[in-house]
Image (cartoon, rainbow, N blue to C red):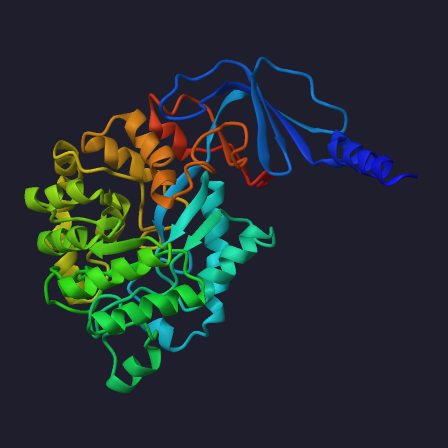
Length: 422
């Protein structure tokens, strides 16, 4: 056979549907994205993990395709949570890191990855873990060995020595033993640690820009890093093509992080107008993690947290119920994130009700966990909507999430990267 004929035959074989892994989904309705009205009865065709088409009506399936009947359900894009800790469970037992092997984090993470994806969250941003555990989970879910979402992983957070994100509460020799190796002092060393995180596989840089509620310190919640250190972190990360997410509670810490070029503020509890203005001016996104505040207050008075931590939880409780509403009024861009791990994994969708309580519309709350969150990750052409060429990350619910996001608290069917999670 001549070379030209061989090439033609090869092309024909590749194009034959029988050689592709195709799933055809018949839906009662489809929400393609947060900006569009729901479509009626539709057929979504998925081949090799990607959406091929979203067509009106219940079209016949090609020979050899798997057919999924969801004619009594609404299909929507898989949800995105921009702040999770898959390798941790809620509680005040921070001391366990002294007695458990690092490998145990992966076991816990596998459990939580499955709970998260079954809740409809097909992409998450892992916001701080051990040196390699989140990266192992990222690979495990990507290769299909572990049921779970797509994982964008930070690895260990950058922190100041002795600050939130560093090891605290033990004898000095134990603190040293548990040191992640990612604390830094001064602009030069902080740039070095960003490069080290990139070298080790970080998809994003996480920093603890201010004090924290759950760390074993009573030193307030304002800025930890200096302005020069934060600017060095942001500039170095951006030079490597990485974004930076900053844990930040105090207003001046938020403002300094935004001015330094940090891409997102996590929590943002004491946001004020000056900090909001800096965020708007610099395109910094707020990830409010309202479920985190709900989760920690649920455990007050049970002997779970130390007296230092309990005092801080009570201090922030009232502000946590209103700060996102202020951010909305001040025009701060907001995207969805929960801090799952501070509360039980799988409850992520409880964030929607809390966002709506603070004044966000159901449609905008849905957008915050789909198109807006995808944009924060730089994956707006890959996830966050149902369209030809996008990753087949799809969920099925009983109602219209654009009108009532509580429907997202009970997800009936999940597909991630074209694979159905049973």
